[in-house]
Image (tube, rainbow, N blue to C red; front, top):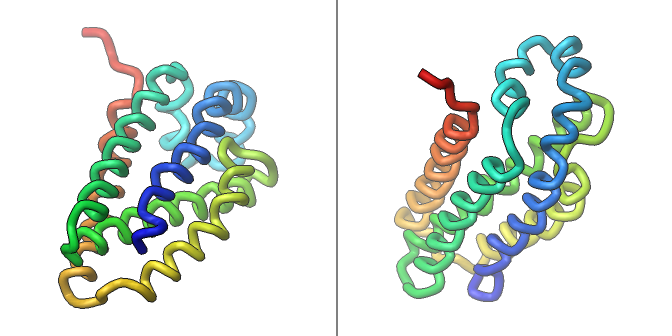
Length: 169
């Protein structure tokens, strides 16, 4: 696992750069079409409709910091919990890649981050598999993996909330 630890933030940034660059333009071009086909998508896409590239990039940066902290804890200690947390975070990130693939299938076309999802998913799956094989898989590591997934999911909910355009009072 030690050889793969720092690939998590590296692959994450490779992937999210495509999202940062493309999200605003894609939303402005495809919002009406996607929400007409999938009315429920309005709740998901509406916050992004008026988002600035800087605001989206700030959310990505905050997520990168979390990945780096998790990597530092896993790299600097021999505590199975932190190795598990890293693995859980990587699993959560890989699930995020799968979501982009599903989005592309649903809209029958390109979505921001599709290309880097296609490129990043195979090595991410391999890294997760190889790391799992090399990990101490006791209860501490399994709990750590669950915590890593929960931290990542909770953080996504939080950053999506703060990415919404703020209403002026």
